[in-house]
Image: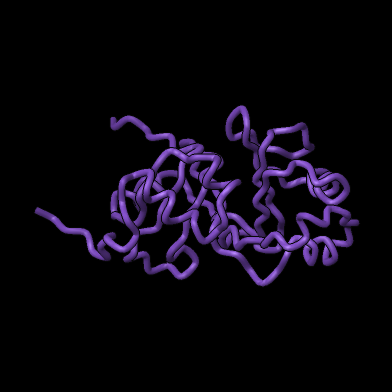
Length: 187
């Protein structure tokens, strides 16, 4: 039996040949990976909505003016009507998946209320929807050269503009996006 890989707290980098339009040119942060499957959010595909507009849509007060123009992201094709907040620090919210000691993925409104009122947590990526894989599905896609993987760097998630996240994740592997071939070869 092959050893199971655990890609929790890793980036998935879509290969150029990725045919699924939901994932083409995407950088996915994996928040959970187990023998049950995997869950993550796309962190580099903004939708046409700011954080302030999202708060208005869900009728939550928003006083964090410095965060008003932050983009909301397409997190993936599952539950696109539901918000997911990837954040640092972990905090103590009602429905949080602790990815590691610093980073959490929260789906409860209390984290958004805190963001709207006090601007905390300050390091965050807000998505609508998530990306999910059934047991063994992600491993199969990786074996088919659909994804590259690399341990995640929180600096890329929370400190870089979204346009720089994919090329910066590739740099962790020593790869330039321009040199990434669209086809996999076999010797």
